[in-house]
Length: 166
Image (cartoon, rainbow, N blue to C red):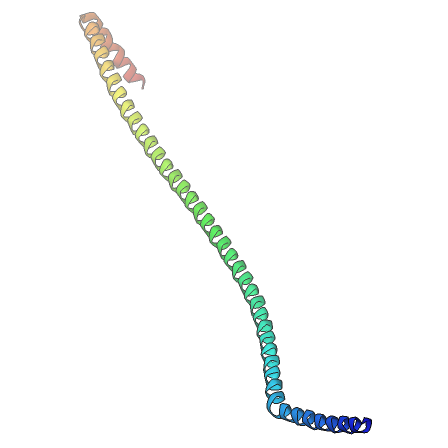
């Protein structure tokens, strides 16, 4: 019986081995290839995803660099615009001051000319008034001097004497 059990075990072992090899061959043909293809596809997908992630990371780095560059350019442009605005403001103020000074000088010159004109008019009026007063005084003096005949003769003689000396 031992021999029978032994033979039976060997026969069973043989058929198990044949079935196992057949199963491996079937699995290799129908299961391993699709499983390996799926694993390979998965591996390729992971590689592609990693490559895409790396590309995205590089793009993000480039975008950040571009953003920084644009930000610096915007800041520089803002500073330039502010400087130009300050320069325009200062120029406008200087122009306004210069124009105001010119207007003030013009008004002062006109006022001085008006004052000079008024002064000359006042001097002329004063001279006319003094001349009129002098004539009145002279007329009164001459009347008093000429009211007496002796004084008239004396005045004529004095005048003739003065004329002959010249």
